[in-house]
Amino acid sequence: MVSVEDAVVARWETQGSRFEVLVDPQAVQDLKDGKTVDLADKLALDQVFKDARKGDKISEEHLERIFHTRSVVEIARQIIQKGDVQVTTEQRHQLQTAKRRQIVATIARNAMNPQTGAPHPPARIEAAMNEAKVHIDPFRPADQQVQEILAKLRPLLPIRLDTVRVRLRIPGQHYPKVIGELKGFGRLLEEQWLGDGSYSAVLEIPAGVQTELYEKLNARTKGAAETTLVK
Image (cartoon, rainbow, N blue to C red):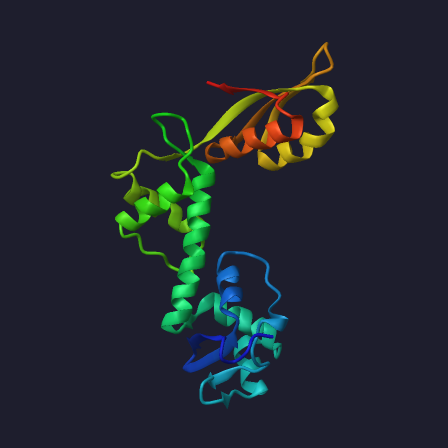
């Protein structure tokens, strides 16, 4: 369980009543990001309050009338999803920092420089975000903020979300070492075995992971893999 000191207050007002729970801030962020979260061990206290900081509890009968359940976990889920989150300045800073890292990683993985076809390094993306004075909402899903952020970055950086296709030729003896990773990078569009025993495929990947793909293939095959960008 999260400690009371480290928890944030999630609050929802409905039907003339206010409902609050004390919850792990990371669990709030994950839930609002659409992730599956088990709140059973993410609540600081197994209670629903009218005022959490004063310890004013709400009766189970009243909770059942409003939420049609007495399950604190289910009620907390509804409060978090429908209500607001009260955080300290320090907590907000920590959550914004984590969300910024997530957004930078998302853009770096999926974006490219349309002038060169090469990915932008995360440091370059983050520098442009700082220059554009991008505001990060710690409780909005990263993918909902990416397009807005890209619009602010484009005056400073040639950038576009895109996918690329890479044609691969891998000696057969290396196939077992790389096939799992290839599927993790993207979508295999064409696959065939060549007459010399080599494996050939076209792999569609996010534009920003090209360098990582080439490095992994070179390491796994000791430089024997052949790659060609499909135009």
